[in-house]
Image (cartoon, helix red, strand yellow):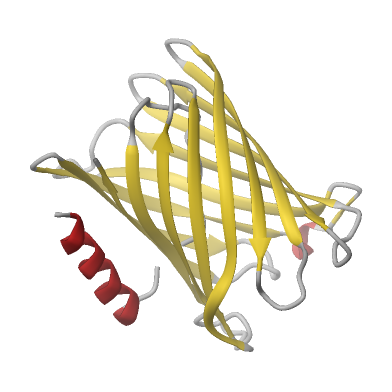
Length: 241
């Protein structure tokens, strides 16, 4: 079954575009193992941003009921670069709190950046997840800093969130509101119109086939500031086994 997934992924990669935009849930499910392919495609009147696309190939495994590791390969295509490997991310997530309605976790990532002369990165996240019978609200507070001789001394702050409604829209398809905000360096936040804020809707559906669970996600983001892409199409294909 896995070989068909890989063939399908390779075919799709050659003929389509997919999002590194992701809101990470706080919960860790012991023994969970998955393969994921996600991406985004920008639509903008500015030729520099228009038709940019980014792909992420990810695998993850939950070692315990509170510790999960992930590996991500980032591949991007921009106006001045061909489709190439941008960076490799090694991630670990530790869930430290769980109750009936609320879960929380911390996340650490080391990013080996191969794009141009950019510095490697370290990334910290606080993951918050609130759930009841009506919706699931996930928020990520993200801090990222470059390291090495090519880096600056500042830490960048990003906030992302996802509100997923429990009641299916139709045919077990769920709908949610998703958004990403990049504020700039903590020591010197950018003015609002120089910040990147993109918000929109996302649809997801789970399909069980034999012993595998597939999740398909499609989304649309609208830029709210002049620094943001006018719009972006998101998608994600994940297989859990």
